Length: 246
Image (cartoon, rainbow, N blue to C red):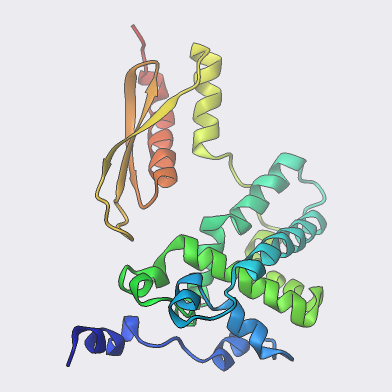
């Protein structure tokens, strides 16, 4: 048996699950199932198979649709929240990390059609591919059924953020730290990547340090540069009382 055959038969790298199963997860039966099939087709697979279309156009549409629907639902659910509170809640739901988390909840990676190289590099678990795929699926849902099925989906999966008991989302650690540094030292903090394992999917791939002037204040580790910087900023903010610049 060739290496390619062995890889193709492994559970994590085998064929994508049938779209009929995903329709049940989405609670929507597509009138035009090719829309959902296209939404699940990553460019790497389309290129390998010589297909005319992939999910990038639906991703573009879904990005706007899910943002609009989530914003409207948050606006109605929390009449006492200010603009900044609504904005932070929206970003938490529909930014890359939020949509990737939602995609994992739905096991969307198991339905995606990826190219062989992308599969071997752990593509079914990459935040970027999962978030883009989630947007594409929601774009397909909108074209096939209009806003109603998208809103039902959002109400179901964003229920915690829409509940009356939901608390406003705290400011991002980088924002809190930056505001403190500006008010205390009159400068912006800077970030530097000091280590990169270069391993796709490594949860500790990047190590970043945050600096005030040229002094390293704290270090953070994460799957992405952004995550590593955020963790460095959180640690620096927690130890802000100890920061003294000579």
